[in-house]
Length: 211
DNA sequence: CACCCGATTATCT
DNA sequence: GATAATCGGGTGT
Image 1 (cartoon, rainbow, N blue to C red):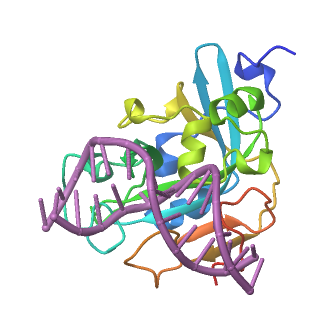
Image 2: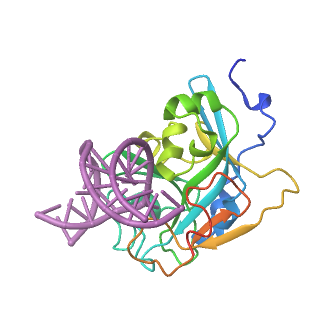
Image 3: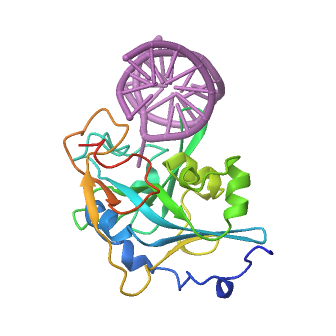
């Protein structure tokens, strides 16, 4: 069975979401992104996954955000307008992938992709992760990056086409979205800015365990 | 299932 | 010098 090599071969794919889609405050954008399809095109391979979990990070008004204490070399992308990739390296070994949001008040913001359901290119993603279990292929922000070969080289790129972009959910898709506190932070735990597809079996952390 | 911990290093104070 | 938007393996209930 050959790997998918073009958009037309996949039943899931539509044209990329435009930059205007991302010009929203981070919390609103995070909700809108649940159910969208993330697409990664690399050297002859096409990988895709349905976003089931995302977290909003704001700016100087959010103590959990990288942008809380102002602009630095690392977080520079978070201060741009919507639709860029903000990819950072953490814990000495992992990448995490965000989409920059847009805010009319001029503050920084982004949405972290935390988990997704594998669609196209599952063989490649299994190889990239060294794991077989589908439910653990993309069930965490760093796992998602490892499976889909998303690294710091892509930091700052626009997400309106290859090699990395998002497409709309299928028409008429009904999604039950649940809000919970964000995972793995020490400040800003009060805000419920983690959004998940309540019916998904591909989350990083089960709902109910997060209050 | 519930903690607990080591890996490994860029980034910030 | 300390921390980190993580992960996977280990131990104990």
